[in-house]
Image (cartoon, rainbow, N blue to C red; front, side, top):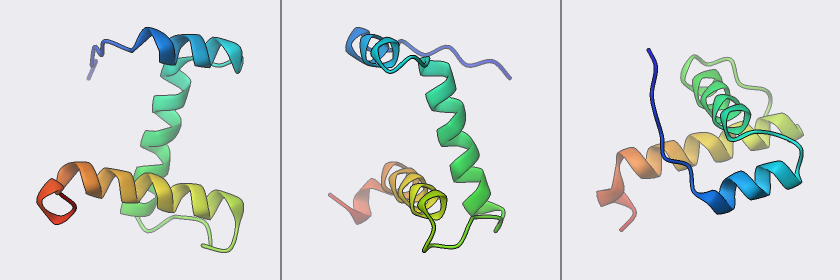
Length: 69
């Protein structure tokens, strides 16, 4: 499935500055969310495990706004 997203110019500029792309960032976010969903996340005491937990937390916040706002 292809999704088209209007990416904020400031985010594109930030990605350029960091020598990456918005697509790479979003794909990484999706991989982190899926790792948690599928029960394949890294241990929570590792840097990657922490990042995956943050991604999952953001996903849950967006999909359940009534719980957070």
